[in-house]
Image 1 (cartoon, rainbow, N blue to C red):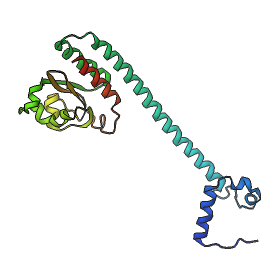
Image 2 (image 1 turned 60 degrees about the vertical axis):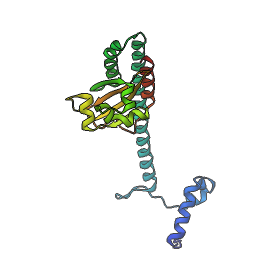
Image 3 (image 1 turned 180 degrees about the vertical axis):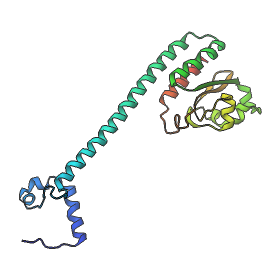
Length: 213
């Protein structure tokens, strides 16, 4: 017996109901038996085949997501290990000269970065807003006293990294009783450090360095 034609709106209501009540055919097997679900013939794909293909595509999507999450977890674990080693290397530092010598190399290892720069100056320089390259370029950042990631201007890059071509940076504000400054980690890849990245590791490292200072 041919099916009775229904209008598009009514059909949408039926589709929405079946989507919401996924157990409908389990509760009404006679309705499922009445459905026309042909297997693939002459190049025509059946509903069953389409469902299998969709499930496989979803499975591939979830596998890709899981692989990405595992990669992030592995990278975070490596950074945590490097940060731990850096902390141990800084524990015995007792003067600023040793800090300036040891810290940049250790930080470059932690981030696997292309360059690291550390600039320090007297607190009075910031308080009086003396016209210096660091104060004029990073005054707002130093006032916020929070680490950050992102692109860097040509002027800032030249001041921090001299003749190196740095496209993105990690910036950490440095502060002690009598000094303020910037610890900058640079990459030639403009996408390496970006504003969307988490700052947990940066805050930890920033706190460690400021305690040493």
